[in-house]
View 1 (cartoon, rainbow, N blue to C red):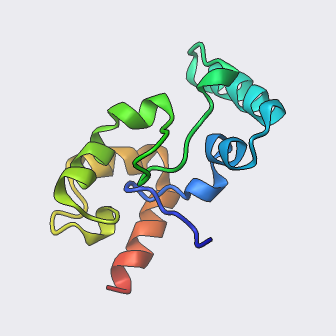
View 2: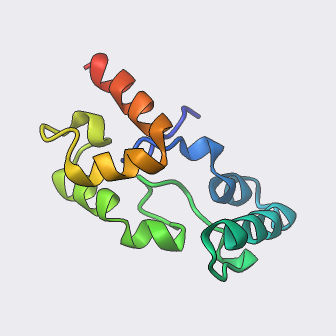
View 3: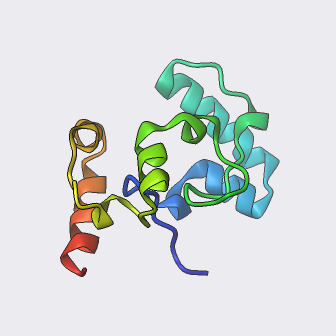
Length: 113
């Protein structure tokens, strides 16, 4: 299976929720839920840790269902933001401040288009 890149540039195959779902590992779900609960100061349960990847039409992690960047990309029908004619928009620039590796990822994809 090829690597799935989220609309924002995150690598789904590196995501704990994606890996726990793919491998159907409850211990990993519990570990990710604990880590993300602490990291994001939110109550995340192991049962919340299920995701088939950003571009999936199936199961998504709860945040991905409300993600404005994902909604925008899906609405525009782009594989990811690198394919958008408005790259990089203000929403994406704000996201890059938190996750700069996504800029690197998307810049690389855009450079190959």
